Image (cartoon, rainbow, N blue to C red; front, top):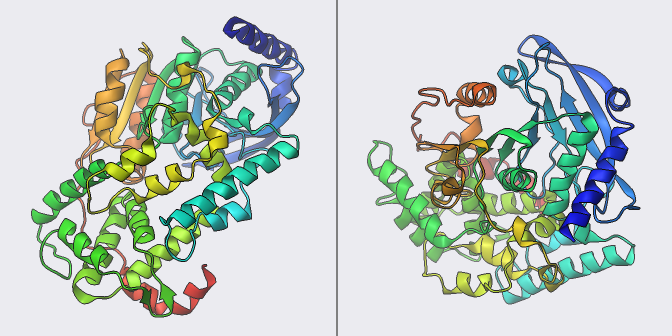
Length: 486
């Protein structure tokens, strides 16, 4: 069966090659973009790919495509970009002029988001906010699960096979477009969820990837966040906090402030109901960025020792706003790749020892995982890591709460025969790119050029615990606007 599938894909790719090459480029909209004072040609539009790679007569579906061409006459392998998510677009621009010196930059849209089909609905966004300001209540989780089930059933009734929008199909899309554009070998630049795609693509199509850079690597079985790891990250912040002069509005550690604040959350702040678990989720999300973490910690201390819960109200609104923008159907259909019928994630999460931040987001998502997705069989080759000789650079952060560096060190690096890992001290998930953008760009470009990690590629950053914004004060100033966010 696997041989038949491989032959089918090759036949489809070769058929497409007959209309590929330069003619295919001509069908895309031509444009220009200026980056760091230089002008580059761009190509954008859509490309049709088979919806079902197992069927010779599969209908074609459109995916967005965006390319920035290098000006070099001696181009090296193009860089295919794979952004984070799941539930986010993969059509992005780059400001990395170092990379464009020798490489094209290619973005292939993610099916389920960057095409005719966008896997979400207003009902899902509403259900993701929970019921009665108790997001982890049995009623809230069941409601979200029911809405997800009904959504996928409705897609079936419309004649759409949502099973074809899983991770394996996304990986085949990347290779199909590679063939279509006439590239032989490629490089992969991936972030967060995109690193899973990069790893699995490399394993599925050995020899195609010249070099790979993974930023915030997500090995298999880690579309879930455990409270034990969250506690480790908080402990790291606390160690740094105790060894610097700034102090929040209250005594003790960050951990102690969290415990006190979460234990005494009132039912309301002003006219707005509060949900302690949703606030925990928001704090967790804000810890993706160390500057946002400092703002969250400031609000936590004010809640704990001044009984000022305005910041908590803003955090709750932040979660609701983000929920309304998420592509929930895509997030679940892609995230279900980590479902294991032999492992009860919900039970394991419930059995975790009580902790400061907990694992509210994981409990909500995995508790709502619909049975209709659990029944989908995904080949083991997309669930397990195997050794690969591809030159790979993994960039991790010591404070990354989303994709902790320990997971990459212990579970990914042993399989990367020619892999290197650099752990950025005092950096969380978003910091890996944003806080040292110039160093990041130079490091990525030079690695794709040579396969060599620059000496002293990154500086040792410090955590600025003094918040750059006063969330509590802003909440009070902008009070009337809080009514606009449900």
